[in-house]
Image 1 (cartoon, rainbow, N blue to C red):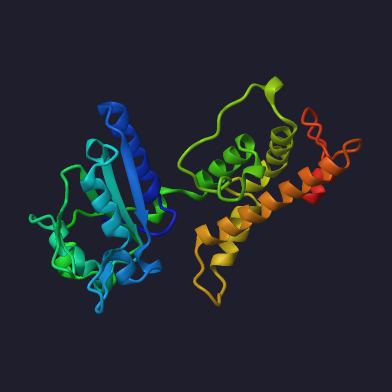
Image 2: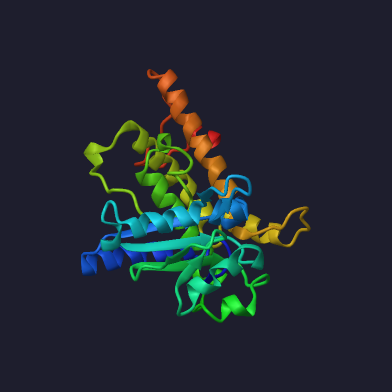
Length: 278
């Protein structure tokens, strides 16, 4: 179980480890991420029709059966199944026999599925508030503190992504926290889109320092009362999404005004309309 607040690096940690093991041992790693709280228990494990007695696999059961059937060589790969969501007895109690020495998943129709030796079960949780002792005692624990990622590290990651990855690839690909980095390009190979994004980064950089405007606003906001739970990562995620949209608007303007585009003279750091707009 990887325990810690959202954005503390849990997903990045197992992703890096999976890729590192693949490079070291030459065994392909495959990750299956499931949000157990977004679907019903029947959709997760499967259900038995009381009338026809027909069994339908759930998501987890389908993944496990696909690995066991080994149609495409799944047994020869490192298979990690990650449950990303709160651990509570409503759904996790069915996994107790999977997590102990038996390593068997017993289905409501009486069928038993053994867990192959190349499969690992992991959990990403914010806390253990709803977890039972029976489940916790069967798992190893890795704690991720919110301090693992400093605010400055989050800032730098966002700016680096903005410098290297075109915003046209979508908000998901421009996520403020990522498992990978963009590809470095030579200056003479830069597309107009990347050049504009780098110009915007040049203008935004001073505001993201340890004592810059964003840090001060974030510190001030943490001291206020909020209707919803306030977290540093949620606030920064919203800010980065708004900035991404501002960059898209600049690019859209340049595309429709090719003769007079918004641009920045990076040699003298002249603050033109791009600075004002962004």
